[in-house]
Length: 503
Image (cartoon, rainbow, N blue to C red; front, side, top):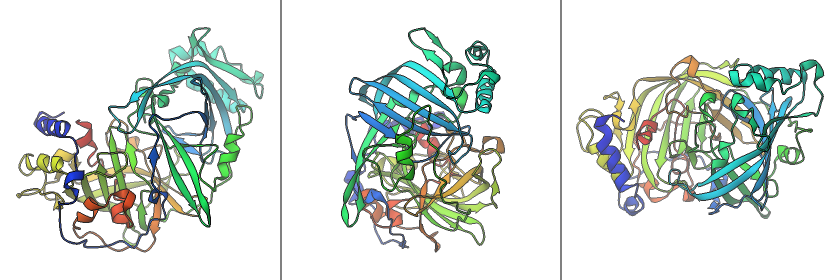
């Protein structure tokens, strides 16, 4: 932490983010623009977190997942009342999860401990692995797996436990870990189940007019470090894409039944999703409150103007996992290049983004005080910061206390899909877990954040400074328009991440 920033970090830690009391009195005036986006998103229904979480039962992926690397997989986990669990991880050669490579069967025990003091709303847990086995679905998969083991000295001995390619047998299970035999080859693979160390279960009702709403249960497990070498030591502070209960999942879900009925010998082969061209033009919103590593809660709103390849947007930071207590908002804008198909992450598109303008709005008293105590000309020009009032920070090349630096370039990865409800989804590259920026081609993401949903194909300029009284008074769960419900965390922007990492 820079020494100059220590007083600000201390102020934030000591005071916390108490914004509810000031929400009704801060700010003033009217919105400069109002979005036509009426979010058809399930966050309109109340979300209930189960504390302590109840894990019992089967949980499944709702589609093909992408982990850093990239790794393409689906998951099927079952937790039993005696704390034992059985997990299947199905890995694929393609981004549609149609060509199975190998399956992992993981057995062990998990014990919930206490509410997390790092990630609000989460529960910490301990786990112990009893067995890990692998089933190869082709000779090529066996050779690729052995190649990964051969990259480390510890893996050489483990290779001896695998058959030669010519002796491969479909459906044969080969042990990688046995607690009873006291040997473990998972370290040589960089494999862990640290995702089980951070848990959150939540429920909501999915509207199904004219029928009664349907109960949906989601299981959030800890995030996976973007660097493979760090995964064995990393303890999650954010989440992966959630699993859903096999008994209470969203509908329609073409993949859910396939995954629920699968096992290590019969991996699911998912149906091909509708292919969408990379048409960024329009306004894209967060469908829910998002959680990032380093205790970052936020919602995003992006607008892309295809005619001149410019973008603009808002992302709002909050102090709570329901995104009801705002702390600060960043508006940013710039340009992006024409996309090129990714050769590393099949199905993805590579772009380069530039951030050239930014504005900041403090949304609670703590952030306002921090900005007023910052070094002169380190965040905006002369003047006093006030709650709910936006100020331009372009002239000072960003805002040092919040980690915003201008101009800024990032190498990005995008993907578009259509969900079973016919909604267009935009996936943006996952941020590096260590908080650094993908500012070189070598650091371009190989996985994705939670998707955004297209809410308006026709766009209008909203670069004028809005007043934020509406956001302060009406948080995400009760809003109607894009501005209240889904402001922005843009892929290019490391904006604000440094601010939270200092804590």
